[in-house]
Image 1 (cartoon, rainbow, N blue to C red):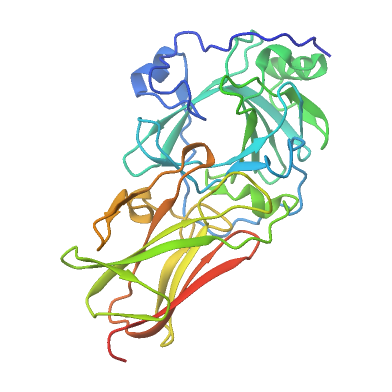
Image 2: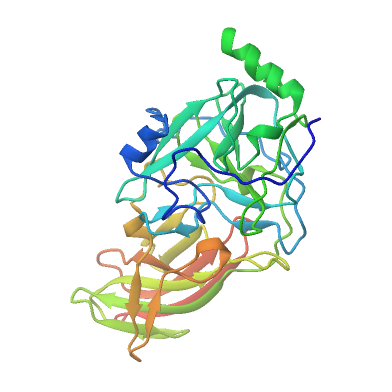
Amino acid sequence: MNTFAPFLFIFVGALFSSSAGADELRLSRSELRALGLKPVLNNRASGNIAYAEPARGTEWPIVFKSQAASIAQNYVQHQDYGTGQYYHGGCDLRTEPYSAARAPIAGKLEAGYYGYETASDGQDTKWWKPWDGKPTASLYFEIAVIDEAGYRYEMHHVNPLTLPSDIVALLNADLTKPGTAKVEAGRILAYVAKWPSEYDHVHFNLIRPDGLHMNPERYSVPVSDHEAPRIIGVYSVDAKGKVGELREGGRLPVGIRELVVATTESRDGNEYVQTPPYVFLIFSTGEKAGWDFRNWLGDATGKWVDIRNFFRDEIRTPSRKTIRNTGNYGVGQFLIRVPVPAGAAGSFRLSVGDTAGNLAEMTGILGSR
């Protein structure tokens, strides 16, 4: 085992002006290229739902710092650190710096440096520089295990300079014989980097072979969660942009285009808030619309959902108060857009749910039915 020592993490040549405090490195294409990274071409979801699901009940790769500091940001979470909005994509697992990150499953081992280029729809293109046997200090280093079905379990923000010697040997051997570096579940792969803002964590992704991001919470050992999401406010928006406010059991006029739900969710005793992965509007007549990201970050077929269709930047309420969509580093609140199905009318139920199955609900009536 290597000896730990505090040191300054930098990625040589990186421009940290807008990304130093961000959870993930997002830069322009030219900046990413200047770092020696290359785009990963097969990281876009195909919309194919024929894939078998990954195993459930997988062990988390780290030991959580506490119940209060466990999952700090979930994979649906809205993020924007000045380089464009995006879904978080994985779960931030709060843990102690320098602690061990273990293989959650058995499989093929990979490691390297990464960054992201983010499109206006919130979709990322991953850029990558594989392990070359010459580690460089960086917060943006990843070690990953790929199972037999091709699911990729990624652990970001581990320290490339303190990898266990047996893992270094495996990675180096893989340079001459690709695909031979294999590990068993539970093996120590790396040690957690010291984060500059004391937000020590591993960003944990679970990615399908075609690039679709799966919900790590759905397929890992459950974190205690008996708390339903909070519905802070619900606002109606008509075709002309006029905003109304819905109260429990209230009536809305016809012509409503969408509802905007101000909401958060968390877990038992957790000090962080996240974006609820399930928001649905269901009418008594059968019409329904909304979002269900409890399994994967995509629509029912696995296709990408434009982030601008899911989140609304801000809304000005009838009381002239401006509410904004926020949420970096597990604080704030989220504005989620829910379309009203064409022709729908009558009584309805608005449900906001989390991965554990807890629901918060509000009812109302649209039109005169």
